[in-house]
Length: 64
Length: 172
Image 1: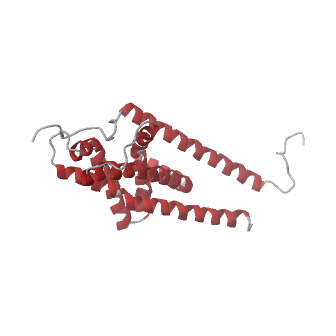
Image 2: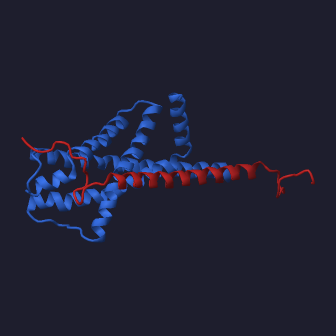
Image 3: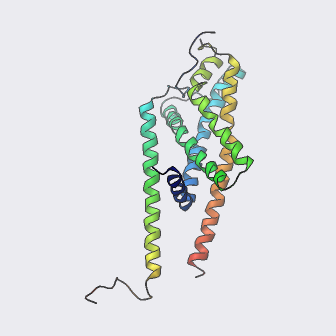
């Protein structure tokens, strides 16, 4: 039996470029974290709104 | 670095964003059906009938190639779902699905599609037995039950989230 037993190429169409693979992973991770961050921010805003007394439209300051 | 602390913090974050995490994993994994379609209709059918039913070219070929690049992120993200399940309590289904998923690495790094295409099309191969090509195809199809289960988990998680939001926001 001859030939290569280990071929780090996945695609049957054009082979695999590992730099592109790393970029795709980073892109997906970036989009994922961006969406998760936005959801967390909106949830925090919602929580903050729901703890304010009814009718309050802004935070109380020293000048109030 | 405190590894158990990092592990727990990561999965606490994972649970807080469960719907999003399962949603992204399900999306990436469902997209792999495109790859399985290409594998079945181009490679397998060409071997069985002598004629391919699907020979992608141009933008379609490029699209399938992009899908190929999303397989590793899909495997990692879906593995996290089942690792999270096993973390909460042992169950055979999650364990077996985790095995199904991670045998794909064998296919990605060793008995690759490139080898499968060469062997099944009768072109000069790289010296491995043809049976290995069929094993690689079998490994690829192991994704199917996991794709179904991941998608089902996403639907269930979304429904529960919607009910939770309704109870929290509307019935206060």
